[in-house]
Image (cartoon, rainbow, N blue to C red; front, side):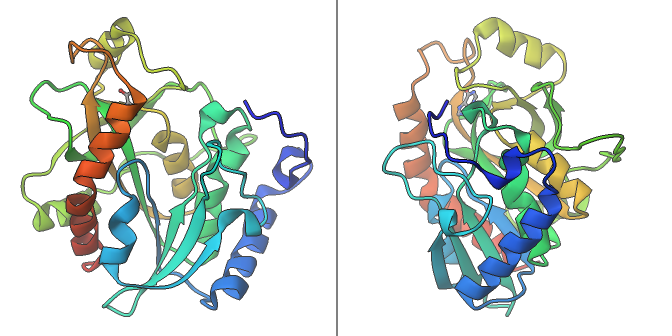
Length: 278
Ligand code: HPA
């Protein structure tokens, strides 16, 4: 957990997180010169190089210049927001600054980027991540579609008695569209654990027993917030490793990062082809 003590606008329960997101969207419009985005993409481990393949990056700003965005957890890492003009004429907001639940800043900060994306006008939210695979037929470096999720964080971005339907949370239409680009894309149920430790083999077996195929630490809470904001969601996981106990060797962060680097160009091409259809 960070030791920073600076006050943050989303930490005050009296603050309206949607008002902060609206303000953030205004600042993004000012700083990028683009007042409306059609879609947004959160680029997780391995997916970072995609933006340049999707179109022309017309602006890149440090995320911390925008209200509500938190300092990156990793020292020396700069989280950025970019505006990309696609060949179709549409505008994509690229979120390269993810606040993870395990950072301990609370779920409001975790989903602020998604709420901000919606406030910029985005109606499609593409959430990507690096994750562990439970299916033994999967191999590290392979992207898979998220078909549904199991939220094991015991938390929610929704506050108060806010009842939101999560049927078809990960849009069937968008999954079919992704498969029309790459027919080999498999899909599975994403289990979000709190992290930052990787799962034990017993936890992975539990995830498998309850219907999970992918284990990760990010996307479920963001997807719920995106649905609340009315966006259509596409979820993609890069399998960076087989989950603990499925792969016989120990898990390492370096292995996860390397799998992402190796897969980068292929993932970029996949995302570029998908957004060209939106
Ligand atoms: N578990 C959880 N998160 C992950 C993993 C994993 O095996 N690999 C990459 N992110």
